[in-house]
Image (cartoon, rainbow, N blue to C red; front, side, top):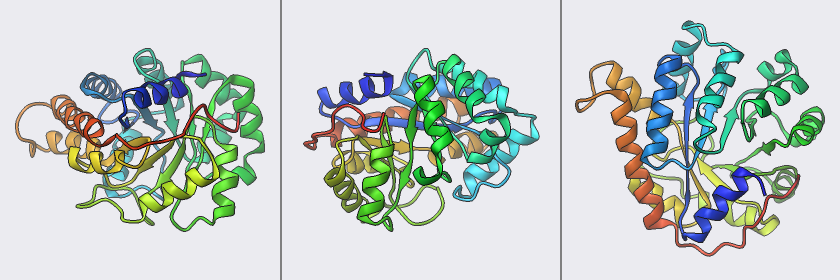
Length: 281
């Protein structure tokens, strides 16, 4: 059992959802990102997603796009992503979320090696499908890294089964069709999608896209194993930077949001699940 498996198992033993928090590396700066991620963990985030800033983020909404643009303008490079992982992986399991092109350019085997050396637990690849992941499958197996692929409400049952089989750690269920971003309410299609994944596999299911407060986190945790939050954390940092927050620093704002979300996954996470150790290793 690896660190991601252990985190999900610990959350299940407490009859709650796992809280997963995302920030792009290098936003608002390298040091600012690390400080914010540590504050998120202190506030109750169980697993961290470090975003790899990319110039063509096809599934990211305007909030994360703005953060990625600032990160890239500030000079963030692959080595900074890996340094960010190294800085937080001692606290909680840490994965990288990235489009595939930067990994190909760096070298698939080299990135797997360096991510593992930094203490990373795996990779979320929104634009890489299992059918085209032979090189990544080999490299991730060689270095003990989790492969986290995405499914959506439009995925067929056959696609869901194949994707779940290829995953380890957890499977990322996008709750809506569209780009990332906070929403007024969570997706009505997400519970059905989670049910379809569970019919195909026992791998834990993390639901992302749209969660922005503890009430929504509780709702998602009532049927999913993990609650994934990204844009809401980025928005707190952007607002603080623009002087639009309710006082205090961006770090304090993300810590406050973490506490609210962590309380939410504990209120809502009472569902029964048979999810066990990761499949597809």
